[in-house]
Image 1 (tube, rainbow, N blue to C red):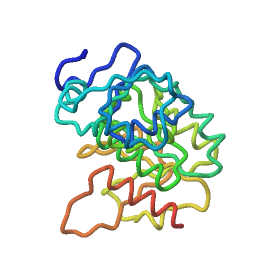
Image 2 (cartoon, rainbow, N blue to C red):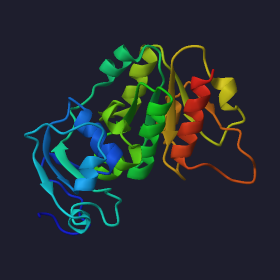
Image 3 (cartoon, rainbow, N blue to C red):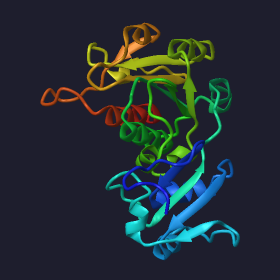
Image 4 (cartoon, rainbow, N blue to C red):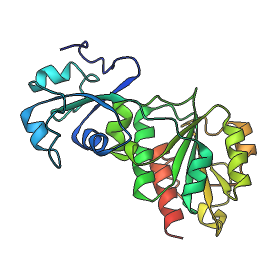
Length: 246
């Protein structure tokens, strides 16, 4: 079996996914081109539905599969190598959003956080997420595993210029709310009646000044003073729930 222990790296132009939810969602996604599935027989049996008769599967034991994924990653007997998803364009997401919120992430670089935000975006009906292409994790097995299948269903837009993307959202009628702890306005008071773009910055540093300047309003979550802040993925989940519950 190719690939060193704990590498998780796929062939050029491919991405390697692992875990039942991530793999199953990718297998069911008609926009994915699949190259090969490495699996235990128990892993294949756990999938919802049967694989096509000619699907390329190599059966292996769990220890062999562990060589194909990131170190100590819970592969659950399934490792899929497939083509990366095609690029998604912001204009298309806006067109199809029908007023659903869009999440904009400013230099959120942890793939676990990105995956968790994708999962919350799916749970609360967000139309998509937007990241800057040079300051965000690439599509990967870690992102997919943390997203628990949402990588296949939530459009992920990568842009060169995040400020320009925020201008495009404003032109489309989105009210851009930046989450920060440096304001007295709570999120509930900042929410508009119309479409919302939720902007979140990296943990610790928060939004960059230029990105903050492109927001229509700044708001905070009303958390207890017993804790300074929430993890960015937790903050995104709470804020998306508040938007969905308006």
